Amino acid sequence: MLRKLFIAGVGLTAAGSAVALDLNYAGTDYGTFIGRVRAMSILAAEENGWDPSSGNSYSLMGRYISPTWNGFSFAAAAYLNGDIFGTTDFDPEVGKERTARGMFLADEGEQKGQLNAVGVTYRSENVYAFAGRDQIDTPLTKNTYNHVPNSYTALRVGAKPIKGLDISLSQITQMSFGTRAMTDFGFIGEATGTAGAAQLPSQDGLGQAEFLNLGQIALGPNADDIAGLTVASVVYSGLPNTKVGLWNFYTDDIANSVYLDIDAKIPLEGMKLDLGAQYLRQDDVGDGTRGIHGASSTAIRANFGDGDLDYNLIGLKAGLIGPKKKWTAHAMYNHSSGDTAFFNAFGGDPAYTGSIFSRNAYRENVDAWGVRGSYEIIPGLRFMAAWFDYGQSETLGAVPNVTPLARPTSDATELDLVLDYKPKQIKGLGLRLFYVNRTSEYDGFVNPVSGNKADATMSHVRLIATYMF
Image 1 (tube, rainbow, N blue to C red):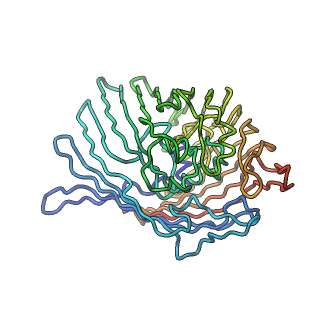
Image 2: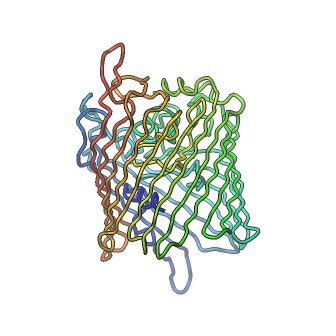
Image 3: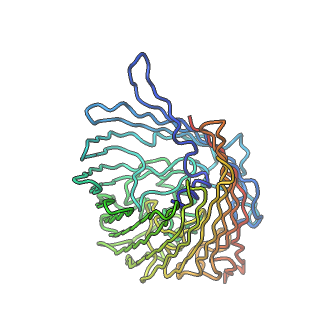
């Protein structure tokens, strides 16, 4: 629960999402329309060429959901994204400035749109199905986003044969990179291939807001097509206050991943004791990641070029949720082991220690821990804070303008402070202000050829305004 609350402070989930326009005229139901306008601006940053220092972006979203007919409904969503009045600097000064490329679909911030979702859903009392394109809610495809989300071409069927039991099978064949995929690859992932994108989305042969075969999404623009990603899941919530989920992700000729999650929220004198445990395992299949290529992929080839995948992640969390969610307090821990990092190509982020700009738990041999808390100051105004320590991994990464291949030299840490305001007087409006202080594990790395030393630290302030209608 706390992680969902905290990520909302980054402007990555819709403020006032309950707002919707019912299209009902003369007693006839024509469906529902949901609209969203969002603006995001960087207010302050380090002048070191690593901390994103320039970015002013906007997005428009419209989603239509048809009435249900014999269990069937249709939905479509379109997005438009771009720079605000040409105020973002897309020609940054090397060593001092960095463009927040993850706020845009286009390299120069020009206006770009996408029909991101279109599909048909069927629901009955015990059976459901989906065919089309949209966000797909699984642990290894669900990710936070700012303006335009990743989207997937998928067929999904599921059944609820008894109360509390949900069984599903999905086949995903294509993926479209959203705006923040650039951050997943670069600023968060540091070109390691572990944070939700294994390819630079903007490179020639790929691109954002374009549906591409998962073979190219994972291994590079010249890779062969693959049959896709097959996801099987069993989720059971019939136990008292407890939910257990098991997923298997089979990526044709590349990888097989198994994810187990146990979540318990136990009533405790007006509060809730929030406990969780998770396990993630990945092995190579067929040729695995052998042959991976692409722009800015020196570190990724070093991490995954031999094709082998051998990764384990365990996680624990414990916390309290106060009465009426007035406050929350949590601690969490992740440990990764095995001979490789986690090959994270399709946007997943289930680890408990994921933060605004760090997902180091997916790197090789990491011990990560963190604490999170939130407090509702007045109705509609919430303060959230978090601290994470990831230590040093054994994964190689890149530092822009310093080196394409860096070894960890510092303990990675991140401090997040968020103020989230949803005024009761203006339904659908959300304002989020956040500050992030982060140190990369590649901070201080010295390029042995040029002698350049990495200043990979951030002290970053950003404001996000969202209006849902």
